[in-house]
Length: 364
Image (cartoon, rainbow, N blue to C red; front, top):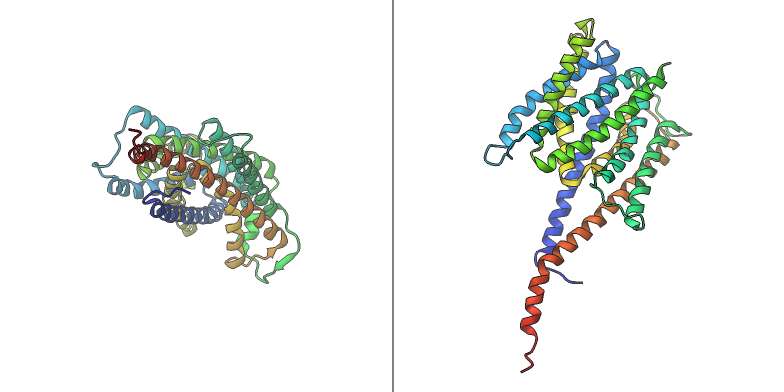
């Protein structure tokens, strides 16, 4: 095997960098799971979807504006142009529609159904990434087949965790009232499911659009500030047009204020920025594949902190999710190795050719 100088060091650095991205996405998915809990609580308490989206994105915008100016100073800030600004508006519109349909679906159904249907995002994202040529696909390639099967397994495992209970493995005498409210199925769950399926489509389109914008403008915090600011304007204007009673904008009782503070700081500013950072570094499919992992995270949060039981369905589904997740990650790692290997060969081929010419004995 041919080894090039610095290859081992670069490999170690690459592994450390990838670990940061995995840790970041696990933290982002944990924030997303908790966001579903607090948003369901706030909307059930009388806040409208539009006011919740408005406050969340307004708080995130106020946080991200100074941070984006600090982290992306004028000396290293990419230049803005009309196409980039249009990209900001597009991802803001797609994100706004995803949030509105998502929160509407949760209000009509339950967080359990929302968690299930949002696991359609990896499948939709995979299809869109292939269409936009962001993912390499060769039908006869084992790597492509592994990625495709892994995506299906992750979605299937997440559905098993959500819909199949099975006998208890670990039972708890405590049963959280929060979980009872989250898992109850209202009579309008079919309508809620339709809204959540539309949310999954818009979320996938948002991830793809975000990847395209970040490729041309690699400044995550500025992009996410523009996204949150656009969502703030759209939700505010929509509220003024649609809402008859503006009392939904009231921050009383205190539960509403705490919910939007969490949503703005962790649900929008932190979670969306980390996802954008990972989209730029690893691509849209990498981020989308963590949605099924969020099911596993929510299960453990329920068992450890909310007094929920741990059932056979959760164990089996989690195992399937992990197998599918690692299958896709293995496929992407193999693709990265192939690309890196071809680049190294291209870089060192002229050098090796010169060395061979110098070491070849003269025929004279």
